[in-house]
Length: 87
Image 1 (cartoon, helix red, strand yellow):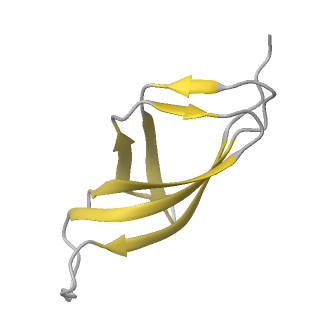
Image 2 (cartoon, one colour):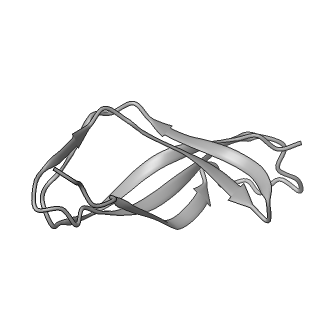
């Protein structure tokens, strides 16, 4: 059985603290993802892992260790941390 790809879109990135440093040198940001399962069956997974590149430079990694279930034909909003790798 062939599964169609699950779609992930990065909706927003926000700082975890209210202070605004002049320069980001590392740390963790919050990401809001939009996830769509176009398949006609439920998809289960153990984690989500992705790299974030901006203008050809690796910016950080998004990894969740939470198990998830994507119901067939549904869209989801998901929040996850991004560990920055600046420098």
